[in-house]
Length: 77
Image 1 (cartoon, helix red, strand yellow):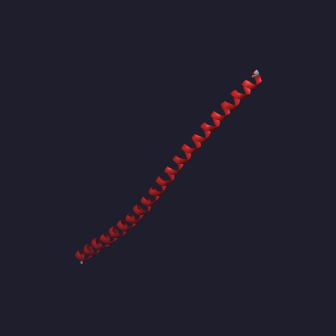
Image 2: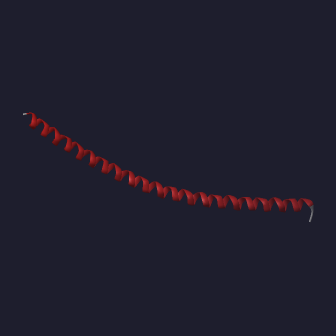
Image 3: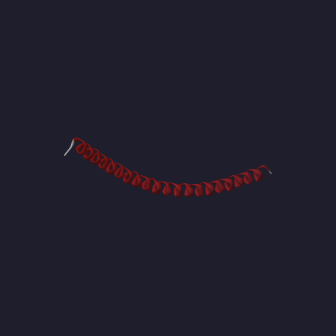
């Protein structure tokens, strides 16, 4: 085989290895992206639950403060 043929074969082999590496990297990054998407979904659900709980707690605190104010007002009369 000529030097040009050998060089061409080496370049083709290198390109094939490079393509394989790129494909593997893409698979790994897609798997990572899928995992991050799932984690983000869970975090968004937790965030919504925490917002709901915070709103509920806020309402209860407001009612408790109103009750205390009414007791203080009644005590002053």
